[in-house]
Amino acid sequence: MAIDSSFDIVCKIELQSVKNAIQQTMKEILQRFDFKGTKSEISLDVHTIIILSEDDCRLKSIIEILKTRLIKCGISLKALDFGRIESAAQGMVRQKINLQQGIPIENARKIVKIIKQTKLRVQAQIQKDQVRVSGKKKDDLQAIMTLLKEKKPDIEMQFVNFR
Image 1: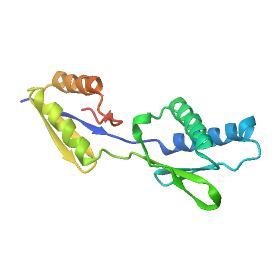
Image 2 (image 1 turned 90 degrees about the vertical axis):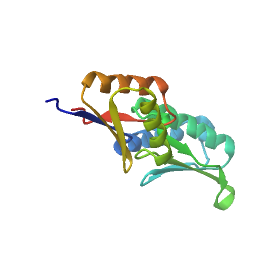
Image 3 (image 1 turned 30 degrees about the horizontal axis):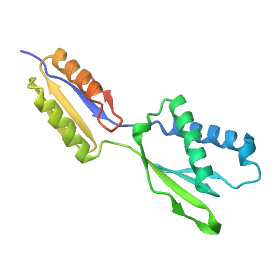
């Protein structure tokens, strides 16, 4: 009798790494000549990064610094959902960046569809904000992991609980 194997496809961002990236970004902003005497701020509110600056140009510079720092901390930029730039108080501009935690339902459906198209003997089920893939052969499950890495959906994902 064969024992079913399975793994979960999830999206979990290490918030401590995000906090570190934000702190490093603020340090760099405070040291840079082009930011001397200006008001710029970056903060983390639960799963949202909020950036405030005096103008669009500085805001975009902060975002570029932040992206570099996030990559160095091991956070994929696919896990970021950039909101639109909006006006804030005192002539400042603000942009919110949502951090993806969990796999959104529409992306989970795309993943399941990709898996079903392989014709491998595996099952994929959406469970809240993750997708569980199970099958009798570990080789099939590893083939699914490889395929999903190659297809590179527009979201960040990790494979966990491989049994």
